[in-house]
Length: 321
Image 1 (cartoon, rainbow, N blue to C red):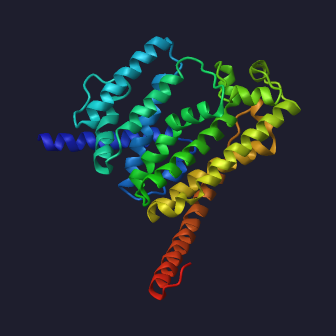
Image 2 (tube, rainbow, N blue to C red):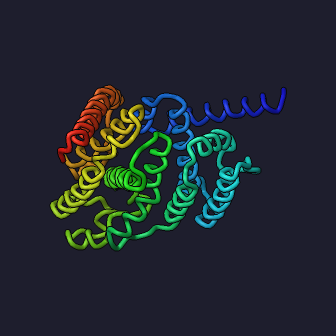
Image 3 (tube, rainbow, N blue to C red):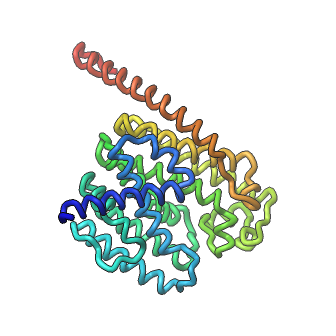
């Protein structure tokens, strides 16, 4: 087998590994990602696989100490820099099958390298239980673990608008992460983690002990309603993102957003439910969301085309819209 044939074989195996990992682990994202055309679909599988594996290094319950996990993340950062520089990492931790597809994805779509450093830094913050005094501190964390994924995604999908669109993508990622935090309140508390700002707990009369013990009641519900409204504000402020990404990626963006937005609304219907179970949507619901997303993306395309035509007409006639 020639060197070229061997490289192609490894790339095929790497793409397949990323697909299978995404399908197994991305309970919500997979339904949106499968709507993408190739090669964007495989690139997103590689991006998800990377983020999943670095998250596992930080969080997987396998007996490693926080210090060992921190060292493993340092090694992962070095391997990431090797891959971004065009060199296949040697002696990988994580799973070596990732890197061929990862290198193809980052080279083809020219993803900014700082996004991966930011993501690793976000995972390092999870190694020791951290309390956020203010929402600004929580927002910075949400950007590192989710906002960067939004920005990386639009570089694969294609977008217009430069830094303004990147900011919208980061805010959409923050909206999704705030949803995750509310949904996973019970699981995080069981691991000694509280992500909600302590200033918000104090303002609503809820203690850390209340969260650790799963105590509900009106103070808890008030706190949750406040957090839900904040998450909703991030969905609202990133609403213009759909029209800025490439048409062939809009169904994916719409579906992924709708799945998480529906999870948030399900939490809002009964906030105390997060203290006893993990709120989720059925597979059928996700499939229906995917179908509706494809239809909605066509409506966005039509509206965008109409706006462009109106702008062109205004420029021709000298009328300001």
